[in-house]
Image (cartoon, rainbow, N blue to C red; front, side, top):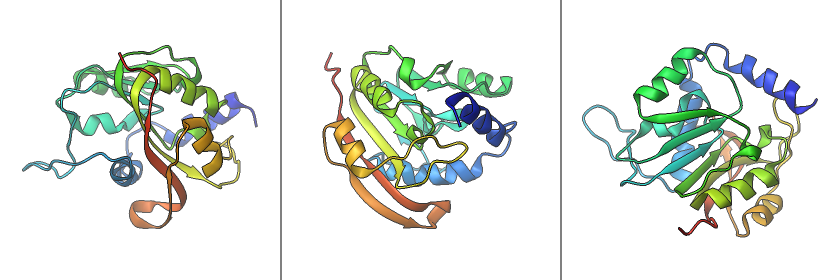
Length: 197
């Protein structure tokens, strides 16, 4: 399967994006493993205080973790899929830019953080995505599944060593057995980007 076919499969998987709770439940665990902290209030236990930071979310889809954040600046989601109009409107109303673009093609700079979670398996060139992420931000927070087989929507087979090499560091690996729908072996961590400005 080529990348265009894979993206079409992914688009069909999301459908009209009406019910994303399964993905959002998994994101709660992704966030914790990526070192993000929730600051509950009377409305929800799932709020992330960005403390004024700017964040680029690569591959955040229709329900980015940025929608659970407050007190941020310059919030952007990059994703190659075309979503229903209401998804763009939701992001706009929340002060988040949603840009249709491949992660390999971003030319973003000057972000405090770049977030990548459950995304690289879907890309054409994960190494290039990581290179672009390093240029874009000071810090990269990541959560990716490793050791899975290639399939219709997942072109890339990621390994711990491959991700460590790409990120020039050492991530953590954990096996998940079903919490919030997470099953399998995952790689996660916080890494240094190249953007120090």
